[in-house]
Length: 404
Image (cartoon, rainbow, N blue to C red; front, side, top):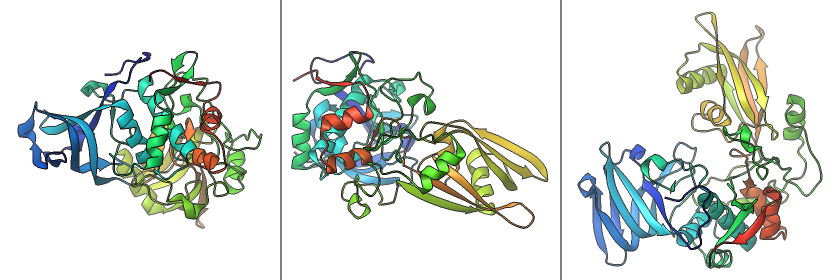
């Protein structure tokens, strides 16, 4: 496994989980494309390793827990290590870092994106992995999994010549702050303002992960108040991730293969009283007959709610719960997963003053920390360089090549 704080002097081999025990799979179909051998890998393969080759795997989970969750077929290179944990398959891909990264860049975004964006995405993905700050799957010996939990790794199918050139021209380059590889987080759309890292994760503030106004304009909007955020959502300033810089009719051609075309810069969703009570009861395990209020307690610099109180009634008695992270808020307030927690709440009440219908008006898609992928796309479409993109989102950092 990669070591937090270590700067490698040569390209490492990384361990990427393709099938996790939590996927609860008993078997998958695999084809060795170099020999045309076909396998049904099941629990009888426990402890085996398939040698370095090019493999096609079917029914690989993508978007675990998100609104685009599906199973896809992928083609990858490297070795496959097969284990069984608690009766379920655990398949790990051992692959050189640079081969992995060109797949990540064209899984996160389209291989048809401008070169500046592809290089920025590749460098951010390389830096994030080598920083090893999260290591969410260290308990099962992985550097990362294949999904949005870590970084999308959906194989070779979407690689383009431009993506290969971007990977070659950025090989070995990382983002550094104070001689340490940066924990370069990124999300799909910040909604116009990125977020401080400590407001999303229980972590110390990082100087290069500060909220950034995603615009060529020099403004510093206050989005921590309800009125300020309401004005921002309904009358936004011009931002790199909006439709001025990235026309909505062109966006689909630049998104990742599994992404759905939506207006992620600004969105809304409406629930009836019954829908909301049932949804919150199901997602939290706390039963509500009705919901009387959603009360934001704290907001981050991007307007993302970090603490939310939900009030309601059960058998005519008051009930309340509190959600204490943007992730939990997004998980609870959508049947699948809410785009972001940067939203304002519009309540429509009936004559008895009870909440009858509720609409969330929101901004962005994702946690909003670090690089905004659609914003970086907007910058690249409008002539900004890779250096300008990375310096915009990761302040006071430098680029350095750490291996050939």
